Image (cartoon, rainbow, N blue to C red; front, top):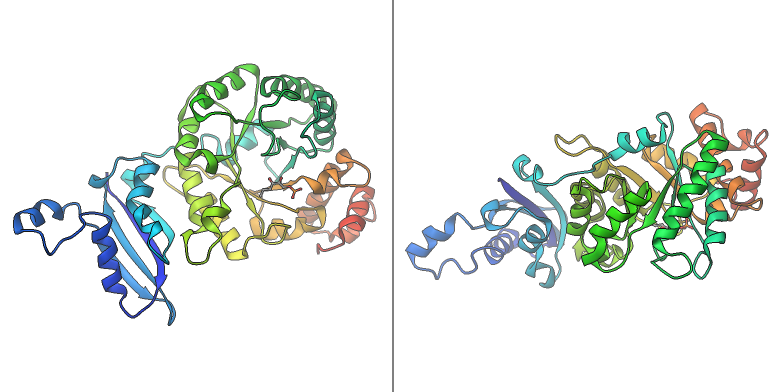
Length: 399
Ligand code: 1AE
C-alpha cells in the first residue's frame, strides 16, 4: 500500500537530525535503543524513516519523514493520527506537506465531478464560473429565499450556495429549500437559457448525513455545501464515494483557520484546503482569497489552488473558489492569479450592488467578459452600466 511522507516545519536549534529521529521513533515504535535485539528486528518494519532534514534559516528547519503504510489503515483519520497525532500537541511544529505513494493515493476518491464535471452540468466551458451566496437569510422565510435565489440566477450566477451558517430550521427547512430551489431554477433557466446549481447546506448530526444527502438527491438537489472541517475529512470522503450522492460537493473552509492560521503550529493551508480536500473528494473548495475581507497570504492561497488543480494520475482537478469580500473590481486580479478554471464567488459583492442582486450578478459577468476580451474594466464600464455602478460602489481596484 506504500507510505505516507510528512514534512514538518520546526525550530532550528542546530539539532534537526536528532529531532527528526525522535519524531520518526516517537510516532511509530516509541523507544528504540532500550529494546532488546529481538524486538528491534520485529519493530524495524514499522519505524518511521527520516528522508531529509534541511535548514531553511537560522531559526527554522524542515524535516521529512516517511511512515510505512503497514502502520495505518488507508483512511485519513488513521494517517493524520500517525503523522501528526501526538506530535501536534508537542510544541512548535507545523505539518506543511503530506505525500502519498501512488498505491495509497488510489485509496482516496478525489472529486467525482471536478472542474470538467461541474462545467458539463452547467454547459459552460469558456470562462471562470460565477458563484454567489444567500445573505441575510437567517430568520427569513421561503418567500425571501425564493426571491433571493431568483435574483441571483437572473443575474447570470452559475452556482448559488447557502450561507454556511444556515442550518436546518423551521423557516427554511432543508427539504423545502431544495424543492423551492428546483422550481425557481427551472423557471429562470427557461427565461435565461442558463442552468444554475443550488448548493444546499448539508447539516445536522453526522450519523444522519449520508441518508439526508441521498434524500436531497431524490428531491432534486443539484449540489451540496458541506462544512467539512467541523464534520471531518472522512465524512466528506464517505459522501463523495457514495454512488447515490451523484451531485457535486462544495467544501466550505469554516473552522479551518483553527488549524491553519498559525505560522508555527497546525497544518499548512495548501495541504489542509488543497491536497486533503481534493483527496477526500471535494469538487469545489472555498478558501479566503489573498485580497478580500478575510485574506490569506498570497503564496498560501496560490498553493491551495495548485494542490487542487495540478495533474494527478488518479484525482480529477477540483475547482478553486477564492472567496470573502470579493467584488467586481477584483475580477482582473482573480483571473490573473487563479485562471480560467476557477470560480469567482461573492456574497456582499452581489447583494450589495445598488441596483440589487440581479444587477450584481450581471456586473460580475460583465467584468469577466471584459477581462477575457482584454478590455480594462473602466473602459468596459463605459458601455456596461451595471459594471459602472459596481465600480463606483467598490472602487476601481481592477486593471
Ligand atoms: C471564505 C468563505 C467565504 C464565504 O463563505 C462567504 O460567505 C463570503 O461572503 P462575502 O462574499 O464576503 O460577502
